[in-house]
Length: 233
Image 1: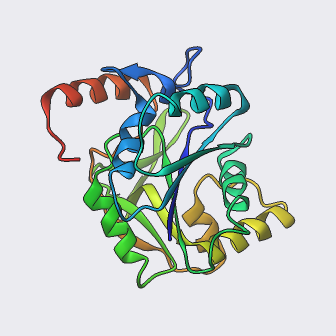
Image 2 (image 1 turned 120 degrees about the vertical axis):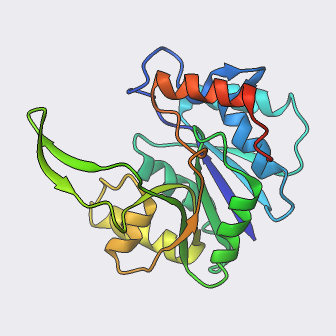
């Protein structure tokens, strides 16, 4: 079984505005709809969960009534952090999923994820217990101090992690449970959590188009790309 958790509980503090960016409507679709529709189009996916804050639970339940979806889609209450939201999602599967089922987590503000990338991720999980979409870093990097370059950083072997990230249910659930019990609550990325516990994470080739809408500049880029290109969802 392949379960997908679409993470919508973020507050968009860096983006600003009253409405979290994943709930903005662009070309008659909410931003979260773009990736939701992509996952919903895949026969390989078995069930989809929308993890959101309390404020948007009613909205999402009403939204789900307005469209016909190929998969069962359920809303789940998120937490105050990404780590807590992920663990809330995993707990809903503890009496449902088998230990070797796959669970995928995707940021709702990455609208340009493509079907073949999701399938590549699932294929990686045939041989690894954890995997993440990632792209190489091409820019020169530095560490700054007081607005001045403090140290240059070599970019060789550096990768930019994206989502979706996929895991065998048993290993990711146990990792989050252990982190919760030991009060290790500062992880912003599930692969970092697993890597800290010695689990190998396979990197799967992604695309620069699978960027996360974080700032208003990102939103402008998303709108322009949406107008100009066919991304072959």
